[in-house]
Length: 255
Ligand code: SF4
Image 1: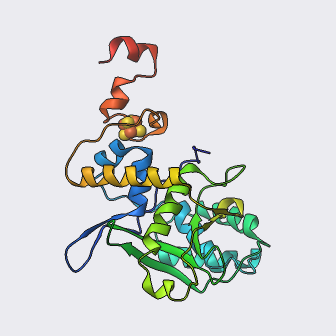
Image 2 (image 1 turned 60 degrees about the vertical axis):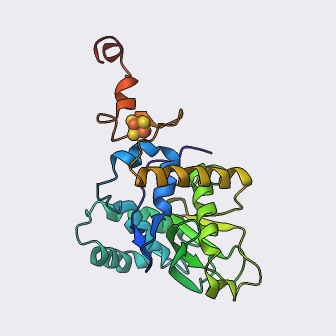
């Protein structure tokens, strides 16, 4: 599975530094880098806003236990509080998420929104849920679930969270063994899947980490052969997008 519907990456994992001044690369940036490092490079000075779909899905995520239609107004009020500029049309999206997640068998987490960092690899993130039973880590997605399994980018995301969780001493003292799986809740589909990242997923994560570090050092990255240029908002400003025109007119007349 490699092509989830496009909901931009949320950015509640903004760059952080530790007391020694070490810069951490957000996990969301690593996932974006795995898709196209050129886009990350082009957007390096831009503030990337949290997509409204994520805001809605995130708030639904706090109510998954015993969710019902009656919760619509309560959750909408919370969303308006968190994001006063949200468009009223997103209320329909909220209703769809609630309908999808109603009756979902859901274990109450022991903690939510837990910051995690791995100083060895310089990555940081925020774990949506910590559970007392396996899989111990849960993350929330505002995309629909694939037919089977999880999206490729979510496998890399899961590998990154497991890596970040390695240095969470307070949790590792509670867990009998370190987590090796992540549960992923696809809120718009009301589907929860478990993923155990493979060696290939971890290799992809390390490759993304190296590329992101190079971007942070000012190096210009190369686009991957499977970069999703046809649906990229940076297409006009990207030389790769301009070098690979899509129409006959572009092919013959645009340089
Ligand atoms: S147009 Fe293609 S290569 Fe350029 S940033 Fe977008 S996805 Fe990457």
